[in-house]
Image 1 (cartoon, helix red, strand yellow):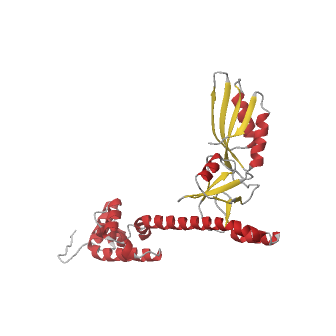
Image 2: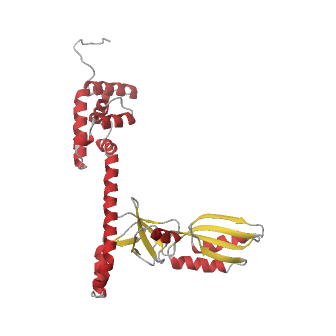
Image 3: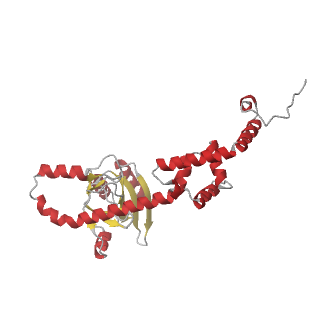
Length: 305
């Protein structure tokens, strides 16, 4: 067998990657072309990243500063920005991932600014509400319903606010409002609208501190298939089987029992705290009424934190 060699050969052919059998050989060939085409890959990678940033409506010159690109490269374990661009050009990484890393802080700031604008809009709207209330008397009921339908905004919590799009809305944990409860909201700076039951002590505290309350309402007061968290405090005489009786009643009404804990005082009185999922106020009230029928239970009430 004769082995033919050539002094003019500059390296392997790209077709060799299809012929070799071992992963090590394929990787060696791949590494050769990665190094051979490095300068071209750097240019290609930079162009790909600039295009991706423009597609995301960012100015590449503002985003692709040396400090920012180098920081991202180091986080991704590349030695330099050129190494990162070369990897982009070669196809080892995708430009959208790099673009997202580079623009993370800018996007967070943009969202914070949008959130602040929404908060200011809802506050401005709430100051105009008293003036608008008079004019509502001149609208017929059908017209009012149509106006509300055009203006309403839904949130993941099933709460709507008039006239403002994409405002962050969250149900407070202190009173755990559920559909059917009378509710009110107030702006928490940078965190959107916090929704509380009207009898929540924190609402009175917010008013005392000058927080402006806003009108909110349930999108569907009857609730839907969504389960909302509710907390109960149960008190009674500690007897054998008490906890089992309590859990049996709850499980007959809901399968969403998330937390149970209890304690017994020196008078053998037990206090049981329960967190459970319910569809609406009527659903919760049925559970409370059933628990009140359990022997030796004296108090069953909603808990606030």
